[in-house]
Length: 120
Image (cartoon, rainbow, N blue to C red; front, side):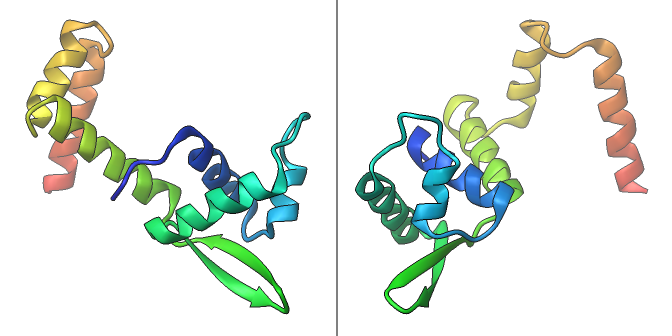
């Protein structure tokens, strides 16, 4: 799965949080100064081409909806980061967190306990 740009992620977050919307409705969720309608519309079409969005047509308007859940995207992003930065090794990723003190020994023990429960 491809990664989202910052602007694409903003739109996906809106749709994940609020459900299907028309571009005009999306604009209502932005703080001032809001982006131009055409800018959001273009980004939405790019997201649709990438496979992140689908649409339903209502007359001449399109209501967009996510075709990928937030969880699916997050899982895919994590997999990509581990592949690209940790030589596809989850052990290297966890080791990095330990070395940088981003995860404690107690948290590691909790993780091991969770893994052992999943195996049973």
